[in-house]
Amino acid sequence: MSEPSFLPEARAYRLRNARVPGAFLTGGVPAGAILDGDACALIDIVVADGVIAGLLPAGASPDTLPAADLAGRQAWPRLVDAHTHLDKGHTVARTPNPDGDFPGARDATTADRTRHWDAEDLRRRMAYGLACAFAHGTGAIRTHLDSQDSAGEGALRDQAATTWAVFREMRAAWAGRIALQGVGLTPIDAYATAYGRRLADLIAESDGLIGGVTRPTGGLHGGALAEIDALLDRLFRLARERNLDVDLHVDETGDPAAASLDAVARATLRHGYEGRVTCGHCCSLALQPDAQASDTIARVAQAGIRIVTLPTVNMYLQDRQRGRTPRWRGVAPVQELMAAGVPVMVAGDNCRDAFYAYGDHDMLDTFRASVRILHLDHPLAGAPALAGPVPGAMMGLPHAGTIREGAPADLILLPARSLNEVVARPHADRIVVVAGRAIAARRPAYEALSGEAAPW
Image 1 (tube, rainbow, N blue to C red):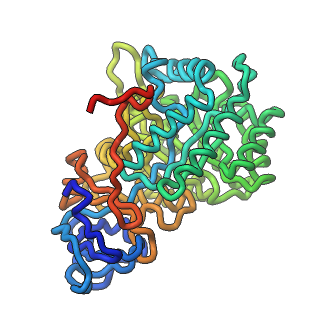
Image 2 (cartoon, helix red, strand yellow; image 1 turned 135 degrees about the horizontal axis):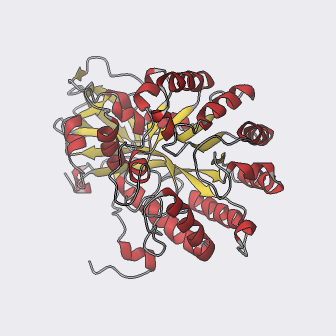
């Protein structure tokens, strides 16, 4: 099943006996379809002219159409990676983080950005990351883009303008393959300066989202930022003036005194921005006293804030000290958030840079790791939503991460019959389908990052 020739060449065809997690069937499970113990439906998927033309109980599709029989194997939509850093990716070899911790990551990234991030470098690395994601079956990506005031680092160029120009190129070049969104990333105190207004204008001109990190320039997450309310008010005013949604890095620390998430929720309510704010990380929430955490979660739910948890990267960074084994997993309390009605999604975050030395832009791999790290199993039935329809809806992409009639026939066909089998194995032999056709794209060789030819 690893060959694209598995699919019929016809304009219209059937995928018979596909097993689809109910979490992806946002238009409803076809009447009469059999559900297994994982709430996966056994169905036939009719594809015509690159679109899902019908979803029927297994065996009910018309015999006149050519068919490929999945024999009860899984069919997933292409997945959604709602929080990445394409501009940082694949820099770990040239500018490593000596200790693997957050201060080292911050300093290494600043050094690499100052020395290397011209348009050519950004273009090469971002295209490489997108090629990896496309080959793995990712259909939509939101990337945060470092947009600090370069003058403050002694750089001779306006880094934000360069990075956003390359992002716009990538968005146009990959249209129809991967839907791209960009978020401005800068320490939150930048929005209290004239540069912050310039940055907000650049983001608006680029159809992006206003974003930032709830820590001061040059500082770390942790404790209370005295000016947080005033800085958030400034950010929200800039956002409202330009009709921009908001996506923030929040409380990426194990310090339980870090409570920016509650401040963001209060600011969201104060500015009438309910349903337009996303917060990533929110690690310290897991270590706060239960009563404090519960109050914050209730306010987050009231404000309609969406939460992105980044399990692989937060396990890598949080509680890291040389010579000491970490004592906690570093992730947000996602089960408590979901129980309160907060939309939660998982995402990949950094890839082979100072903040996370590993990864391959593979959202299926991120999903598999997230299930184990966050205990999203027993039962597994609801877990796929965190990598599909929930982030798709957050990005405003109605068909992303879903399988429904009228949507593009963008699928991942997996040699697994159950959700347990999906999580248990990497599935390098998956088939990725875009607009009804299996793609021939393969993961690019590492040599492509330096313009070398791969030996095979």
